[in-house]
Image (tube, rainbow, N blue to C red):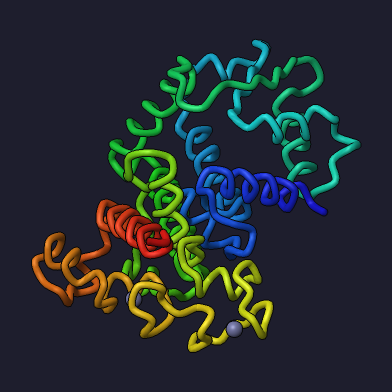
Length: 296
Ligand SMILES: [Zn+2]
Ligand SMILES: [Zn+2]
């Protein structure tokens, strides 16, 4: 397993924790919900960014002085740990390539320190590098043979497009067209989890979903993916599967709720893009479900 794959696995585990999405949710949807781009695509962006910063250093910059020790800061502990194992222990082409660059940079006598820094903590050098990159972008184009800032932006855009293209089809993706899901702005942790799960299409408040993954067995079957299966029918209206789309657009039991929230009993899909609406719907459904489940 390559280091990128290892990192990918760690990031996915983190994304599941952040979003509260269950294991059955596709990796891509969970990553998108957590606002994380896949590691393999982020690698390209980081490479472009570092290159941009290196190219943007002016002549006479202390970092270009031939003998001063070089400190390389990174906010990635795992990347630093991997590099610290030394040139002979690198198991990936990327790791080996970085070590080749480090050796060329150090020459025979220069020391290089690899230093971990928390991300966005206002470290002087980092702020300065950002500043320099910005200034470089503002220079007249004739003075800059390679417009690195533009190259960097292009890499970011490309990565974003690739990420969106690989985002699996689903009702929420259709709703968002070519945008990635925004961070869940819903109030507390449990409503944020509801928002992430609903948008990722794996919501634990849906009986149809639970039946599909085997956590809501019916009398005759442990689980099935059939959208028309009786075990997955909405407990409020019994008309069809209790998918998010059903609650948002069709369920008669939520007509009054939709009228109050959206001013119509048949809202357009665009009216329910907002997380506030998603969170409010989840709360309304859970409330109605618990009331209908209470024996009286
Ligand atoms: Zn079934
Ligand atoms: Zn219903």
